[in-house]
Length: 412
Image 1: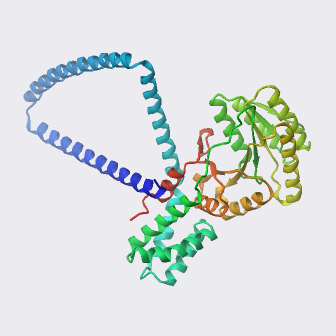
Image 2: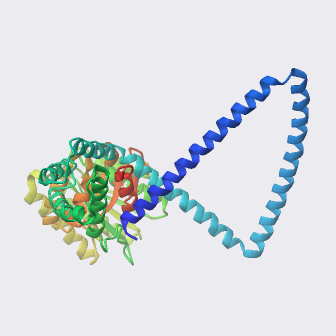
Image 3: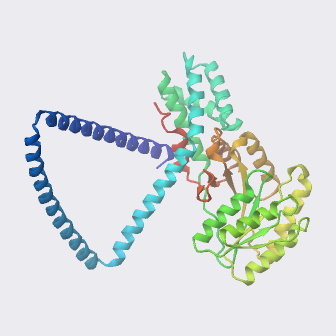
């Protein structure tokens, strides 16, 4: 099932849920109104009498329900015993997973509210003077998409495809054309992510080494701290390497995260050789059976050649000790910078083997369309996204939740 089919199914489910809630509220209001009218017509004596009757009825009904609950509990206990405790535990685990999934979906929906609202406003402006689907319309659409940070290539690609799609579906009025636009954007995004994995590549044996790269100020060190907390809570033995030895305060910042997460850290004085930190860290990780090693790196983009040489040297140290390392090279980008983040991604991809993206501050920007551009132009998977300030607000990226959070309510 494609992303657009999932999107439509979730939209329909949400609509039915809202309608049911509205119906329940109406019924509740009717009952309250009816009860109020009946009470005003009864005398005080009748009220007292009926109160006693209702109390007795309530107590009787309550006792019956209590007996029924007890019987149901006993039946459930017998059933659980006959079917085995494992099945009951499996059911509870499944329910917990469903609740966690719903919570993550809600995070995406809430976190993308700014992007969804802004994109909707731009579409509304585009259609405000809509008369017909002509070349002027497509030119305006292309500008709108570029302004929405979906990327130049995707904007041009989408506009070209829409010319044929609009004719194919005979879309003429405003709502039909808008629906075709959203559907085509989702389809292009879906196709660009074929065979894409958002999972972290874990080592089969020994420590998994994850290298974090990115320019200063994108939230790289904070992201490492949040991921370390996640892996620690999952039962992993985590080690941090403070290899960003040039930025003032970087070592202290990562050290503070290590204390907060209660994980170990390898650090050296400021201005030390970053590769020396990595060498010591990878030896410690191997000898003391750590599950995961997170390596923080420098991000001084203005010294591009030196920076990339440093990254290359660190990777050589890692590979010499663990041939498969690093198992991931995660590029951290600030979503609020929009197209600038895309340019950073292009530069790092050219100079180092980036395997995935972590997008921070997605909840604080109207530029959530940048995820579409990253997948369409770079074909790099977004693996984690920041959807809030709390430690727990770093979420695994889910394409279904992203698409729904970005386009919810825009299909007419």
